[in-house]
Image (tube, rainbow over all chains, first blue to last red; front, side):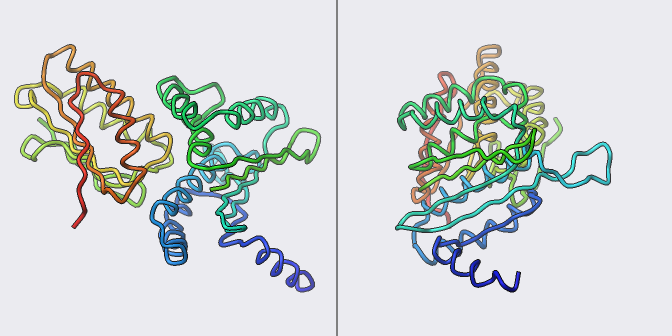
Length: 181
Length: 130
């Protein structure tokens, strides 16, 4: 760590990292961070609406990790699953904000997720608006604990969506998602 | 009639449903982890009491400053419930969507929700918080 600190320092500075968290995600973490993040972004960029957009994308990403990450802490209570682990980053680079996240998924779920993202990425804002409402009215898809709406909301709020999948072992893949604002 | 009063938290709104109160109130943030669990009792209360005597002309004040995607789904469910109640019981329901004009997101979502209702009288009410 000591040897790498200069690398970390310059890399995070270069990428304009405002905030980075790597570990178990909880609702409490979101609530604790809300004010800190809002104050930080608002003070520096004086825009209430951008702050709201950033936080809403951040909420969807963290709640996705809470619900879907396949990397989980060991639970002491056998009736409850462990906490979802992953990474979230908020940054500002080349005059725009980004909110990124990374977490493990099951490789067998990759294709379905990729298809969903490609579909969303191709849609116009108007199409996304319609699609969001259509999905809000329907019942959740199988395997979806949330409303399955988070990805659509992120695409609506952001200006650019990028994603990648990196194989980790025989059954798991690292899913990376970045939303540019 | 029993009242339904839920205190606000960092990520869930205040709920104040009682006959004596001036209208029903849903006010605050809504980005809880499990929105179906939170709004379950709210829907139950409405199902039981909407259009009863004393609740024939109902005003619901919604002042939501921020919400997540699964809460949006809950709001659509709420409006579906209200529309059905009107069809069944012929009562009047009015929703005031109160928002701070500075908060563009709250305004836009209010407009989107307004498009979803036919029988509920849905008012967009800009107001500047004190």
